[in-house]
Length: 133
Image (cartoon, rainbow, N blue to C red; front, top):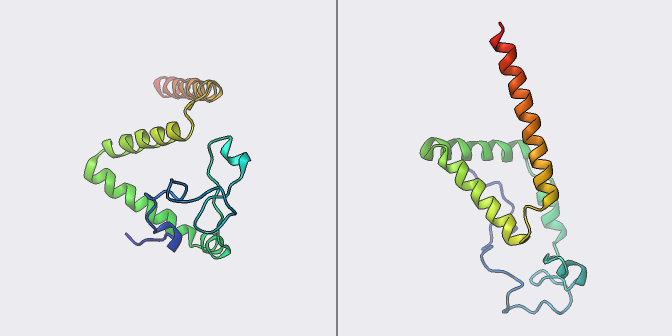
């Protein structure tokens, strides 16, 4: 699979620039997080980004990115079966939980339940329509 990520995404993301080895209390730079209190109160880290990186991102070949993503999941599904997508969904859930400890909130759960009920209604209607043919 061809990497379509810009250079800044290919760096080692396991090293947190806002860890104790970096001083985040000073002015923003390309290597340190912005000391914006508005971001910190929500547990969000805000990083300064070079214009070049924004241009690379916006000018990328989005069709190629989508194709690469699709190819990746086809290969994973063929190799691992449905387990691959289940594990990915669990990883995304855990990531959301680590970013927001209250995830999923009550509003999210209510909206999700409403969508599930509506989907069930549509499936029931479709099943009934095919049963009477």
